[in-house]
Amino acid sequence: MKVICERAALLEAVNQVSSVVASRSPRPQLTCIKLSAVKNKDGDELTISGTDAEIALTVRIGRVDVVEEGSSLVPADKIRQIISAEDNESTLTIETSA
Image (cartoon, rainbow, N blue to C red; front, side, top):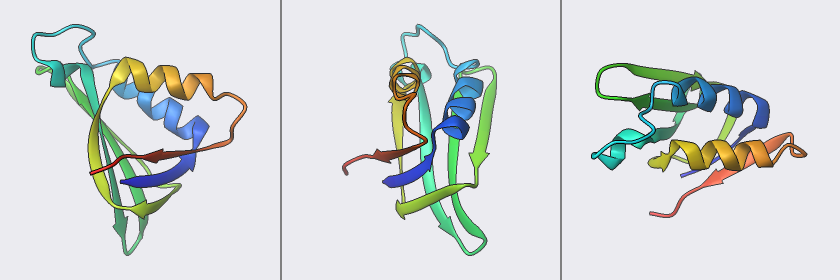
C-alpha cells in the first residue's frame, strides 16, 4: 500500500478513530487501526477503521492519491505520534510493504 494524503485530514481521521480503539487489550488487533487504500472510478479513497470490540468507527478520506492499493493494521498510538510529529509537512506518504 502506498498513499499520499493531506496531513491535517489524516490526523483528524486518525484522532476520531483512535477514540474508539482500546489502549490496552489482550487482543493486540484491538489496539490498532486499519488503513485501507483503494482506487475507485469516482476517485481514490483512504478508509481508516477501528474498534474496541463493542463500538466501531470508520472514517473515509477522499482527498488522497493512492499509488498502490492495500491495507494494513497499525498501532493507533504510534501512528498518532508519527503524524503529530510531522507538523511541518502539509502532505504525508504512507507506505507499507507486503
